[in-house]
Amino acid sequence: MTGRLVAMTTGRGPSPRVRAERAARERLVASLLRELDPPAVRDGDTLALALPAGTLTLGIASWSPTGHHRLTGEVLLDDRPASHDEVVAAVLDTVGGGEPPDRLAALVAGSVDRTARYLGAPVRSSGDPTRDAEQAVRYGHPLHPTPKSAEGLDDADLAAWMPELGASFVLHHLAVRPDLVLTGGTPGDPPPAVAARLPAGWTALPVHPFQAGVLARDPTLALLEAEGAVRWLGPLGDPVWPTSSVRTVVDGATGASWKLPLRARLTHFVRTTPLEHARRATDAAAVVAGLGALPPGFGVITDRGFATLDPAVGGERLTADLTVITRAPFPPGRPRVLAALLEDGPQGEEPPLLSEVRAAGDVHAWLRRWLSVSLVPLLRLFGSAGLGFEAHPQNTLVVTDAGGWPTACWVRDLEGAHLRRDHLPAGVAADSPLVYSPEEAWQRLRYHGVVNHLALLVAVLGRHTVGERALWGTVAAVLAEVTDPDAAPWAHDLATSPTLPAKAHLRSWAAGRGEDPVFVDLPNPIRMGP
Image 1 (cartoon, rainbow, N blue to C red):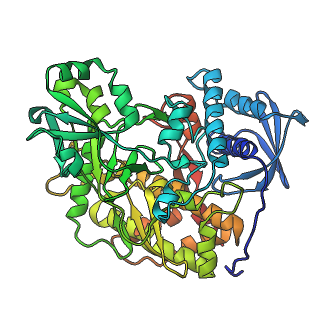
Image 2 (cartoon, rainbow, N blue to C red):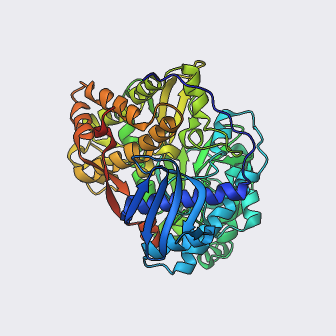
């Protein structure tokens, strides 16, 4: 079987609402199958699930061994047509959990509403492929029940702040007296427009405009302001645009980047920045800096430093509401976030990555090249330095050449990095939040880099080309060829382990366990063979 590709085109199809609801059902059903394994009968292109609410019968458009199934629009409940809301209720009733079912259903509905809005919005190019990709992740996580949930943000907030709607805005800044500031790493200097308004020796903390509104109601900050310890400088500097994470913003003029706190619940996390997260990022950046040359084709966009209000002054919550992480600019080569390249287009078009692979001409060769700059370097660094990265599709950037071939993989967001305790380098404390047991660190790398990242990539490519089984055979072949002594043991483990760890997003979300998620075992697709 060859890896040659044939172009696929999709005309204007169902409405944004229909596509958003179908995507939500796919996520709920796929998560239910992966995490709870309900009694199921698959008969050709039909799947029947025995649930407490009744027998749910769904049409299968494509089946994925890693759970990235695609469904058709037909759904029956006990042999009668089922509405979207009935499907949602049937799944949530099966999952149970600590959160009230009505609240969970409302969160799903809110995520669907936002997805439909993003799919229906006009598509405008900024002229910058990096920005366009960051602002094109319209569906979100393929195995999360509410990938576009945004509790705390109303409709006006979405238009003002969300990347999917092409937002751009000016940051506010809070000046903080030097004796009240806590820093780590190298936070960097403020933009000239901010420095001109900053009292000598003080630190300016950039603040997202939404967060500035939240903090305007904070009594502790108001007291510090009344005492003259902090001072609002207002909106200053060049406009910034948000990346796919919503809270990381990029200065369109200089390329400077900041990860900002948002007291809003996106998916199932309130996106503030506890001091522990900031320290993990800067400790990871220090480890990366000490590595010297990275493997060819692999790069890390480091978090350079952080600045915040000392928790001894305002308490841990206010610190988490103000901690700003300064990130290195995007690298050259017009990198694009992998998550956007793997999503269907807003009108149902096939994922943008397919055009890259089609230009290269052979999907197996393309995948081999990608693995050589992504998974294999990840394994090499884990073996040599004990360092792993949260390399899921939203934290992974792809660089391709004019022929569509991948030339570089960049990972980012060092808040999610992890270091094995048995590879502790000089300068990193044993109690650093970056440090994990070897078992925990390996679990994190396998989940983010393989189950979250590679499984989605293979599912999307396989669905449109030669099938997943053939592509997992290519992955197995690449791992078998790894001879680097640092990477080879981990490549062997990946290729031979009967299972891989998968985060149970649905169960964790339903139980309110976002910070302490449930994991389940996923049959290892690399062992399937071609």
